[in-house]
View (cartoon, helix red, strand yellow):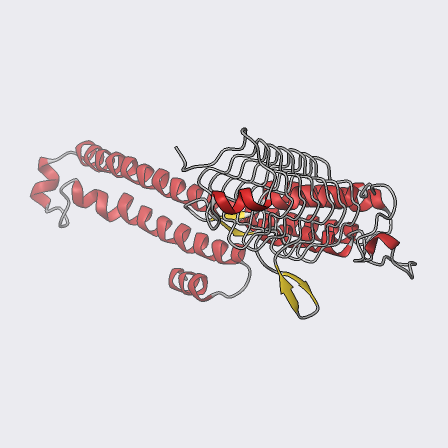
Amino acid sequence: MIATCAWAAIMWTGPTWERWVLAGVALTLAACLALAALIGPAARYLAGERTPLTDVERTEMTAAERVEAVNSARHTLVQAVTGLVVIGGVVFTVQGLSYTAQTLNTTQQGQITDRYTKAIEQLGSTKSDVRLGGIYALQRLTTDSPRDQDTIRNVLSAFVRNHDGCALQPGEKTLPKRCSDAGEDNGPYVRLPADVVAALTIAPTLAASDESGDVTDRADFSFSRFPKADLIGAKLTDANLTDAFLIGANLTDADLTGAKLTGADLRGRYLLDANLRDADLRDAFRRGAFRRGAFLTDANLTGANLTRANLTRVDLTDAFLTGVDLTGATLTGADLTGATLTGADLRGVRGITEQQVRAVAAVDSSTKFGPLE
């Protein structure tokens, strides 16, 4: 019986709890058999009765003495068995707690999956408030389930791309005039919907980094279109804005630290006091097959932080760069014709000389040149 239960517990393919029941039955039967052996034959053996008593031995030892010896041995064995039972109980308790923990973890993962599914359903709602609730539910999930952070970042990034200022929504047939790439001023700044702002703000905070702190996975807003958008104070740290259409948008006080802006159309926009530290603004503005540097023509970057920014072949024609911090920036092939650089810090810039800057841009005594200190 014991062997059958033990074999069944090992080979059983049904529910885990049934395997534990079979193992418990086998152990209980084995313990009962061992206890009977210990209290009976083993106790008499320890008491000195290794062979049946002879007539002489029986006369030399009273019955009370024999009973006392056996009982003493039994008492010792019972104590030993009690210790074994306690140890076995501890083992079973630990195994039970482990099984409970596994069950709890499975339940929690199931709850997280249900919450994720519910949040995704909310993102597909036609009501902005419901979508907003889904976005914040996904943000909460990144805390409860860090391993889902990358997935949630990608979902929120896709939501932004699908709900930017120029994406046709259900029921819409034509795009707003501001979505034209002609560059005209098509009215006042446009305030983005609350759900888009939330996703635009949360997704960059979920960027993944390696051990050295370098960003490995960014919030992907590439090819997003936000013409004439009110993005004052936007938090877009380390965001991927490759080929983004941001013509005429207001990015005053925006945090674009480490952002990837290659090919972004930044014509005629406001970047007053924007933080573009370590931002990548090189190359990649495309118009058909014609490739050139990113456009910052007429851009107002007064007070912007462009420390170590890569501005290779960027068009800064007539841009306002008053007081801009360009220390250590790369300006190889950049067009500074007519740019205003009064009070700008150009120490340690690469790819352009002081003489080249002075020849095409407006500078004064407050403009700083020279090597980094």
